[in-house]
Image (cartoon, rainbow over all chains, first blue to last red):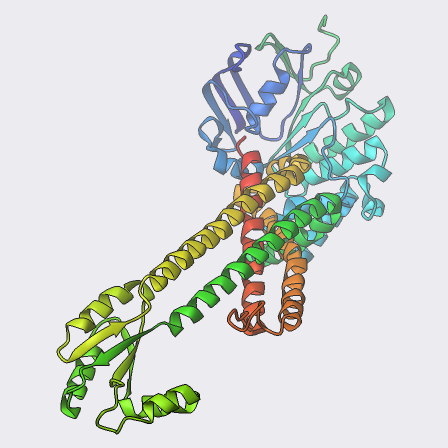
Length: 231
Length: 299
């Protein structure tokens, strides 16, 4: 069963740059996929279209049964509730505590306080940050901040987790910690798509690797590594 | 239950963020405060002018002099004919004997002159004092009364009344226009101030969208925040109105320069203005937030 289906997707920005050329892609439920490629190859555009930050110029994108290309602005929240997104710069609210940052994602659903509490604590435990619940993001290390961002992205149990260079700002050992957390999440059944430049990580994880070049998929390996590529 | 939970959370968060972004909130609050003070002054001024105008208008009376040979029956006929006119509020009859008695009591000169006449020779005429509902139409009413049989002369201070009417009319229109213009200007001013406040929280809105908050979910906390800003912004203007107006009223003994110009009594006037200020503050704050946050939702 495919969670994501892209067919004939084309993206041309208003400034005339074409980021994605006629792209077809299928990602199965429970997959762990790396998207790699040089800067400007269209990686970011590709995943931005998945969570409807960008709209394709033409083509069809289905994510978890939702026709993303046809989704109106006012309905984007319906898609966003089914997936989580993690960024390189964490995007945390610095004036809210770790607990509040994670709870934020549940509060918009109007869940009862007790349910929010138990889910947040459980998720913080999963990423190993239960003891920092009352701290503010600025008091945490980069790796810890990223784990908070991951907790926020998965707290409502999404089917899909999209990670845009989640280890881009972190050192090697911290990156591996993050990858361990992500792998654990994937093993629980969440489909995971990760854009990265980090060759070490891709080589160690041995997951599906999709190589993009100039907006086209040039290679797609099951259990691939970065070393195959001369980029 | 779910809607209630979302609502209470929104109110709590809005309250929190007023204080978390205190410096910018303070900018919005002081903007609301300053403009509401000006609005309060404009309302107090225009209401007092209106009040004065109404008092003067109430005093304007049409005096209807009746023919000397009028019989009692005819007098009641005339009264009926006046009463059925649209614009007539009240009709009071004064017979010539009571008028002359009143005049003789009021001064020795009148007493001398009028004392020389017997009851039958009394030079004073029976009169009706007619008060009208709408002073703007006093001329028409006076003309209609003039047509009635047995009415000899009709007086209402022609010329002077028309001038007063037109002056008050202008003052009323100008003051209403001023208040409305001020409210509109305030709304946009506050909207821009709140825009700056919200611009600094673009990230917050972006994250809210990211975690699946619907547009309405995002707007509501900001609306409540605007409501709180408006509420806080109206505190000082309300206090200034309540204490300031009472002090002014007491300081002038309820009248400005002469007993002719009466100020409006502080109660319930100040409370009505307070409510108006609070409502304007809240509406303008909410409008400002709505306008400002709308811009960031067009992604």
